[in-house]
Length: 433
Ligand SMILES: *[C@@H]1O[C@H](CO)[C@@H](O)[C@H](O)[C@H]1NC(C)=O
Ligand SMILES: *[C@@H]1O[C@H](CO)[C@@H](O)[C@H](O)[C@H]1NC(C)=O
Ligand SMILES: *[C@@H]1O[C@H](CO)[C@@H](O)[C@H](O)[C@H]1NC(C)=O
Ligand SMILES: *[C@@H]1O[C@H](CO)[C@@H](O)[C@H](O)[C@H]1NC(C)=O
Ligand SMILES: *[C@@H]1O[C@H](CO)[C@@H](O)[C@H](O)[C@H]1NC(C)=O
Image (tube, rainbow, N blue to C red; front, side):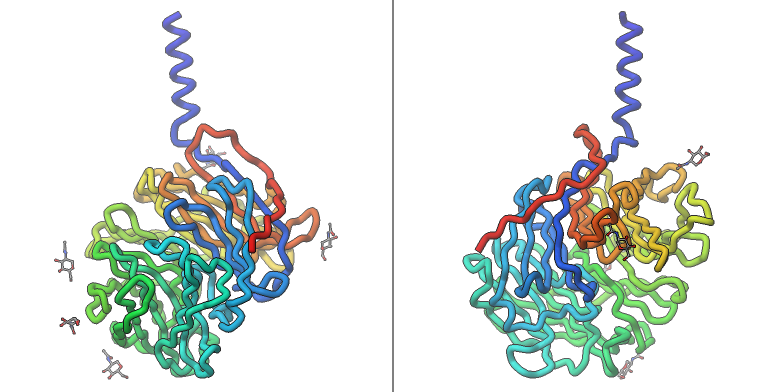
């Protein structure tokens, strides 16, 4: 009897140990096919961590889709026609950090516009009040006069602990199409609703001695001081820039070397001890992930490695276009989300890779290549989040293979005792206005 109990205990332990990451929900809804791929901006709601997708245009107005629970069994849909006064900074903007929910004034939404309400070329900060969810009366605030700016680097976040909005506005001397920027203006609000005048600092992009840089940092993360840190790429220099003051007039820069023939989109995450992780595509034809891990908050020491997914055979090897990263809040270790496809053969990759150690030994990592299994075709856009319970959330716009419909989808993975989910539940978003 004792022996049986022991065996049962061992079996149970093995079953529930490291390999217990699983897909715990997959929700999708049909949306309009959109050729402007940046028409997608995903986030988690502040405080309750419900996944949300903002669409620049859905049957006309901008619309925000929000899961009514963490598990996303239902989705609400709120059209925001009032936002039509603004031309949002969607053109060429990689998803993330454009639509932002205030972490302290619950329900208040902020957007960045390319400058339309006041006809000039200035960036505009737009606030939609909590009591006005359809944004019928947007507050449009004119910001810096930046003639031509690298929209791809335009970012908005909120400093800690007061939740003050802060904008990273790249400036480009030339056309912004290739995202080449020459400097940044940092505008910081003095109050959570940005009623008071903003502080303004100029950062030369050449703070590392190189003036012609790419605004490819997708993420902004908060450093140990509660101020933004982000990435720029100047040729082979990958710079991690940290604001050290509320106005960002003081900075610290960590520099890494990458092969810019292979690297374009760079992603950033930070762990509970404010150590940064940088992820991007592999720098060689063989590797899939470039992984940089700071070992202390100032990043005076770091590791940089090329990771190759175990057991990917070369004939079916699909090029990885983006490597997104979050830090699992339970393990403090990176979880990557890899997407890519070979066009036009459309062999898609949608893969979670959960590291089991700080070096991310790929023979130990946990893999979920869910795309083909869930019937997803060519990748359009995706974003990656983690909530306070360690659930990793991918928000995706893709084509659903069996119907050719364009869908928005929320796929959640966690170390959980819940049942594994292996197909999408399609929902009809509920209109709220
Ligand atoms: C950066 O550029 C500015 C303006 O072009 C110039 O005045 C400054 O000397 C440059 N700094 C460095 C470190 O190259
Ligand atoms: C940054 O701004 C603060 C507050 O305005 C000021 O006290 C400080 O001297 C400035 N630092 C630099 C390096 O300009
Ligand atoms: C980190 O950098 C800041 C600013 O450069 C410095 O004041 C601080 O002492 C550094 N901390 C450590 C632990 O090195
Ligand atoms: C890779 O393949 C080998 C041999 O088939 C197998 O032993 C190993 O577990 C596989 N590794 C992963 C991470 O799938
Ligand atoms: C989806 O579109 C492709 C290419 O246009 C076509 O070959 C395929 O038959 C379509 N599938 C369905 C289910 O309509």
